[in-house]
Amino acid sequence: MGSRFTWMRGLNSESFKGARLDRALSNIQWRMRFPNAMIHHLPIVGSDHSPLLLNTAGNLEINKPSHFRYNLAWSTHPSFLSVIKDNWNCATDLDYNKRRMTEVLPRWNKEIFGNVFQRKRRLLSRIEGTQRGISLNARSDLIRLDRKLRNELDNTLYQEELIWFQRSREEWKKLVRLSPKNSF
Image (cartoon, rainbow, N blue to C red; front, side, top):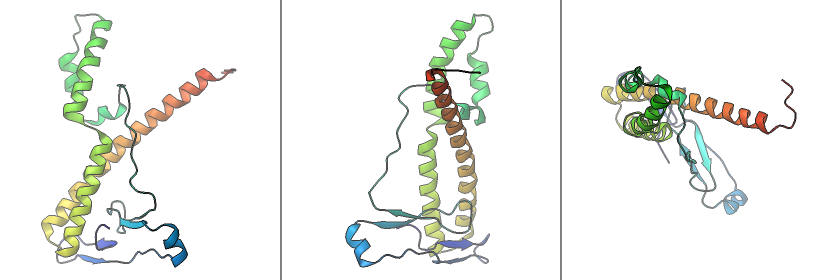
C-alpha cells in the first residue's frame, strides 16, 4: 500500500526520478502465520527513501488525553501571544486571570491550534497522496506542494516532540512524588 515508489528525488519535473527500491520478503510459513500482513510505503519525509511499515495486527489507535493541561507546543503558534495579551487583564488579580486562561486556551486549542497528532496524520496522508501523484506524473506543482507539506510536517513534528517532552517530565515528577525516599 502507498506510493508506487519507495525512492524519489528531484526538485522539478525535469530532474525528477523515482523507483521502487525497498521491499520486504517472507516465506510460506510466515504468510500462513500472518495472513493479513501488509507492507505500507510510508511518506518520504527526512530522506529520499520511503520507510516500510510491516503491519501484522491491523490499525493502531493513539490514546487521546482525557483532560486539559497547558501545552508547551502552543508557544510555537504565531497567534499564541496575542491570545494571551487579549485575554490577560493586568487590572485584575492572578486567580481571575488563571481562570480566564483556563476558559480561553482550551477553546483556542480546539478552534485554532488543533490536535498535533491529527495534523501529523493528515499531513502524512497528504504527503503520501502527493508522492503517489508524483510517481504517476512528476509535475513541478506537485513537487513544490510535497516540499511545502514536508516543511509543515517538520514544524508539526517539533510540536509533537515538545508535547512528548512535557509529558515525560510530568511522568518523572509523578515518580519522584511517589518515591518513598526523596533524597534531593
